[in-house]
Every structure is written in structure tokens, then in C-alpha cells.
Image (tube, rainbow, N blue to C red; front, side):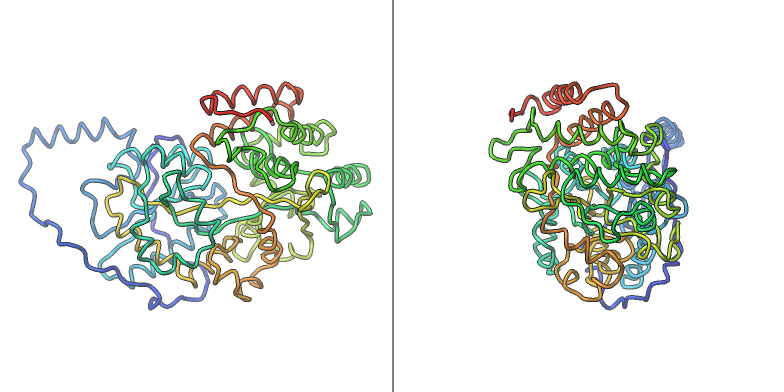
Length: 496
């Protein structure tokens, strides 16, 4: 899908198989001020013809058409649809939320507007839609890494007036709230969960390699040593996958590079952005060490073939084929992988919890706190040019009742951002692995998701790709990054 294609309006059937949640939990929409229902005067034929020509001329820029003239009783919800046709976790969940909302609020409608695209294309598409009231939806799914960029561009509406009167907002953990808070101190999104990252490993491959089923590496050398052992003793499998390069996008930056970079210090200071000076960090040894780790994986052929590693669909291959088929020994990846393996999911794998082990990613030398994780997640935001913002927030409130939030965390293999859910034994036992990944929250870090971050992330991916292909040495890639960093941040850089 190109950035200018029209996403189809699709009303999804509710086939979730989850227990119904009583609509009594959903607060009905309160009546708003009366809207003018005066009929429009008849159009002159020439006016109509011009309008038709105008529509044709602007078709390439039109996406889901939500602005002027939209139905005041319909909320249009735009979200990222999986590129894997067999995975419809979000579709199923939203279909159920639509059903609840419409039942609790007679006369109100929800129109689901999916955008089927890889992450990078989704971000581009969304930004194009948000520029005009003709194309802006009423509610949009925003990655926390991009939200500050959209806030700075004036694309999103601050939600503080809604949040101040919403009692459930007090249930959200503080770190999750800050993920959608801008430099102006206002909040522009409601998080629907977070995530953490660690090491997934195949117990079967480890057994063949003579490695322990309860493997818990203490430092980077332990991780590389295990991968080398697998390469030597279990030929034909991939020892270690770490995402890399521009095709993998933010997965390369966050799942791999920042998991390494944030493990090079003592866990108390940010190695990417200096909060004291409000500047980005260049010339750091930690940055070069993280690049060297990536270089080692691909130089020693411990990872996938470079052509496969740089395939934009590598994430789908890892969770849908390589891990389930026993072709990958270790994967540095996220807490959400099981969403593809559950009953009715795209790649059912009922025995995954018996076949895979979990380990925390260690710090570089085992220094305190001994392990590292990165957290991100997505938020529901209301575009500044949304036609029905009040109705959109009412739909957010439906999605974020305790019961519905817990249902989403379980379906999406997400980590709870509501304290009342995180403390619920039913949540911790809902799926294997949730307790492990929730336990990484104390050691986790959040990206410095300031407006320049998307450009910084791309510069990191380019440096990673250079050492992955062997086209650049670590020193050359780091130098190139520093140059790109200065350009991306208007020279707001500090040397360390």
C-alpha cells in the first residue's frame, strides 16, 4: 500500500471467542449541545460539477474522509492492521469494543478504518491523514515513538480536559502516562499497554547443543558464547537473531540496539540523550560497543543470512516460522510474540511455553542492575482535526474499562499499564510469560521520544546496516551516525 492509497472501510465480525463484558460497565455518551439539522440549499449544477472535479483532483490525497460533513453520530477509528493476513488480534478486539459501544449508546456508530501496512508505511500514512479535516479520523492508534513528532506538528489534540474528569486515569502507572506527555506538559494519548523485551530461546536446540534449559546469561559474552556453541553443535539452525538495518525499522533500533546500548552503562543515566543539557549524545564508547556486538553476530554468521536479516518481513518470519519450526535458537525480541501463537491466531503453537525458555537480556559486563529491557507501546490519540473528538474519547473509555483493558492485554500479550490489572492474579496467570515480562518493568527504559527521535532512530538503523553488511567498520558507522545526529537535531549534541 502506498502512502496515498485509500484504506477500505471494513466492519469486522466479532469472532473473538472471549466472554462477553457487560455493557453496564460502559458509561453512555452524555447528550451534547444541539447540532444544526437545517437542510442544505439545492446545489447549482455548476457547483456540483466543480465539486465532483475537486473530489477527483484530491482523490490521491484522501484517505478515510472524516472531517467536514461527517456524521456527528459516528466515530471513525483508524488503526494498524497486521500485514500477516492470518493475524487479526486488533481487528477482533475492536469489533467487540464497537459492539459494546453501540449497544450502550443507541444511535451512535463506530466505523473501523484499518490501515494494512508495515510500521514505517503506517506512520507515513497516518501523518498524511492527520494533515486535513477531510482525511483525519476521529481516533488514531499512535506508536509512542512517533507521538511527540505528531504533537510538534500540531496533528494531535491535548486530552487533559477529558483526563481530568475521567476517574480511571488515576489507575494508570506513572511511567505509562509520561509516554504520551509532550514537552508542553500536556498529555496527547491514552496508552493501551506497554511491553518489555528479553531473550527467547529454544529448549530443544539448547538440549542438542548441551546448553542448560534454565539458561540465564550473565553478560554479553554469555549470549555470544551460547550462539557460538549452537553454531558448532547444531548445524542448520540460526544461532541468534537480532534485528538490524533500515528494513526492520524501529525493531532494529529498539529490540536490538537500545537493548544493547542501555546495557552499557550503570542503568542510572541515559546513554542516548542527556537530560541535564537537553542534548543528544555523540561519540560514546557504549554506542560503538553496541555496534560491535551487531557486527560480531553477522561477521561470525551467528545470525540469519544478511539478505534475510534485511528483509522487511523478518519480524513475521521470526515469530511465524523460525521459532515455531525450531530453526532459531535465540531471539532478542518482545513480550508480545505469543499473540501469534494462541488458539485461533495466525500461527497456532499450543506448546510454545514448553518449547521456549525466557531469559533477561544481561548488561554488557553484568554490572548492576544486571539486566536490561526497553519499553514502548501504543496509545489512542485524537487528531487535532477530528470531526467528533468527544465521541472519540467516549470510545477510549469503553476500551479502557478494567475488564476490557485486561482482555486486550491477554489478547495482545501486552504488559498492563493499569495498576489494578497488573495486581490482578488472573492477569498474571492469563498467559505463560506475562509474569516474567511484567517482572522486567523495574529494569526497563523508555526511549527519549522527543520530536527529533524518528530521525535519530533512522540514523541508528543506517549505522547498524553498515556493520551488518560489512560495508562500514564500527568506527566508520559511528562517525556517520554522529554526523547524521547533528543534522537531525540541529546540532543539539553533546560529546561523551
